[in-house]
Image (cartoon, rainbow, N blue to C red; front, side, top):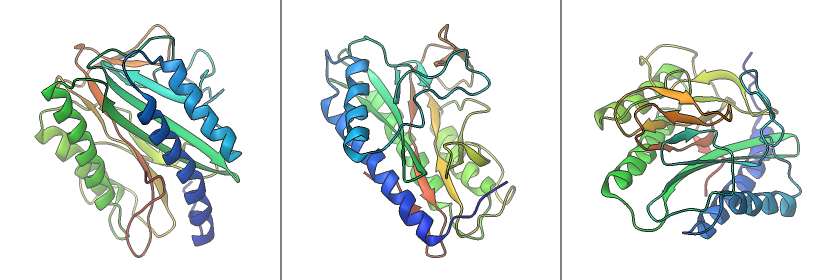
Length: 255
């Protein structure tokens, strides 16, 4: 069931989204060669504390997970696509890092992700991250009243495929509200004009995931959470929480 949010609720969700934006900005600022993923997690955790917000990630355990998630960020490095667990791994020159983060404030959730490169970037990685950002922008542009979920999926997938990148099947965006994952599902590839009509008050997490090698294969790491590319190529992940409004898409997690 898809819950339509009131304008007041969307404003309240924006407050949660701003906590997310601040945390991702803070994490990006301190991420450097030699900094551990656990240290990045603590930076984000401190932003939550300062805002009086909670983490929808910490302790989260969906049906596929062998254990509850142990951190407030997902930190996915290089061939990790999503759901990476922050460990003592220290960032190295040229690492491609994707950080996914959520915050719950006043009973509402915000969810967003960024990808970036630490130290000296590879040209191929720069292109991958830039394409992920363009795919996200295309998806947001399609998130207007009168369109359908398929229009968002088609917009995202077209950018990804045109650049020669793979898309992990079965993973994509979702509704956001009182819970981090709500209806509807928002795929990263699909047919325009198909799927649920977009209405004022719907709030969606649009989140492209790109596999640099061009194939779609992925697998779960031994931790049961981290998804890695089958071909060992690098991956990028971007995301914003977006409200569908009569005046156009409103990004609630803008940084």
